[in-house]
Length: 104
Image (cartoon, rainbow, N blue to C red):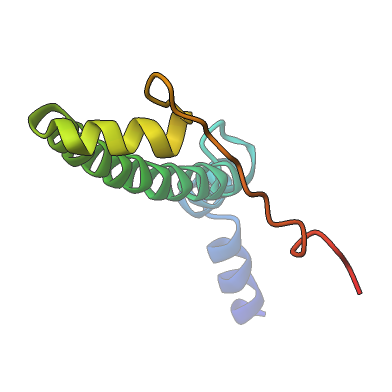
């Protein structure tokens, strides 16, 4: 009988019950519960990957900008290739490869 009383006293100890209630509240019901923190961590990881991508793009674009600002032949080449610009009295012919669009 004393073992049952001892187990009963331990299980219904006010400090133990308060601690268990606090842990349950923090894990499931709080605004910063585990599921919310997990979702926010996944979003943060995705944003860090996106940040690294944009940092690489900025570096690549800044080197291209420096090249274009320093070398006029590079600027002309870039304008011709990307914006289809041409000189006066010059004809421009576009060759479009349509074999890649066909599905056998």
